[in-house]
Amino acid sequence: MKPPPFSYHDPKTVSEVVGLLSSLDNAKLLAGGQSLMPMLNFRYVQPDHIIDLNRVEGLAYIRGTADGMEVGAMTRQRDLEFSDLVEKRFPLMHEAIAYIGHRQTRNRGTIGGSLCHLDPSAELVSCAMTLDAAVIAVGPNGQREIAFKDFPVGYLTSAIEPTELLTAIRFTAWPVDHGYAFVEFARRHGDFAIVSAAVLLQTDAVGRITRASITLGGMGVAPVRAAELEQALIGEAPSVDFLRQTCESCRKFEALDDVHAPASYRQHLATVMSRRALEKAYTRATGRAPSGSMPAAIA
Ligand SMILES: Cc1cc2nc3c(=O)[nH]c(=O)nc-3n(C[C@H](O)[C@H](O)[C@H](O)COP(=O)(O)OP(=O)(O)OC[C@H]3O[C@@H](n4cnc5c(N)ncnc54)[C@H](O)[C@@H]3O)c2cc1C
Image (cartoon, protein in one colour):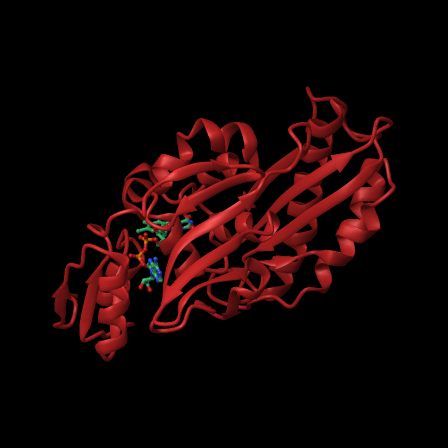
């Protein structure tokens, strides 16, 4: 299939983009094109105007801040993958990026495009949810910050208004000694995950969990925080059996039922992915596996 006909616009500044979005009907922004181009070719979307963000200045950067980092919306996934700052301060994101598509798609795909496309299985969406990110949107009324928990509003639909663009994402880092893990189940490497789990943990000196952030991807219309599980872990130095039992709460989430997997299978995967991610994150946080773990050689 070829894309439907459209007019192409090539702005150089954010204010030009906002001007175009405000004056044109049925316009779409083009970032890396790794989701938009297939959607155009399949004619899932039929915009009259494409506004290309690739030559807009000042949208591609990774900048350290007092409490973490700010990333420009047009930053390529590949630049995040090879960023020292991401690897050292946001190891969850570093681990998750390796699961996104392929080297070729990461070369072009951007963080802003991934967040705005909002696939329920998108690794960067899960990371943003787990890290309580904030996104910066710019539109005709200026700039506003949206907490990431309020960003997904439906299937493939974000809180960005049609006259706005996402310009940056702010992330707050966890303490350097936190535990983290991103695990997912996909049928082939590079495929979208059927279910994923992203975990951040903080523990005290004796290995009790003091803070937990857990996101399940691929279950519903957007990644969800497993709040009940997060709460159940506080104050615990969990054994494998305890994790197995508490992760059962993830079976309660509503799940998609589609050609890739029935809802019941996704719910089962949610219990398994969350437990595996927690075991890994706990081991990284404390330097020892949860009690009752199988020795590494036979695990
Ligand atoms: C073979 C293949 C495998 C893939 N596998 C995975 C995978 O495993 N995991 C995964 O997460 N992704 C995967 N992807 C998708 C990929 O990560 C895309 O890069 C991403 O979904 C979209 O980013 P993009 O920069 O290409 O955005 P585009 O495709 O250009 O845009 C996507 C959508 O976001 C909107 N948009 C883009 N930028 C902005 C902005 N700044 N403000 C407002 N709206 C904006 C566009 O209008 C469009 O609606 C895969 C893609 C391919 C082709």
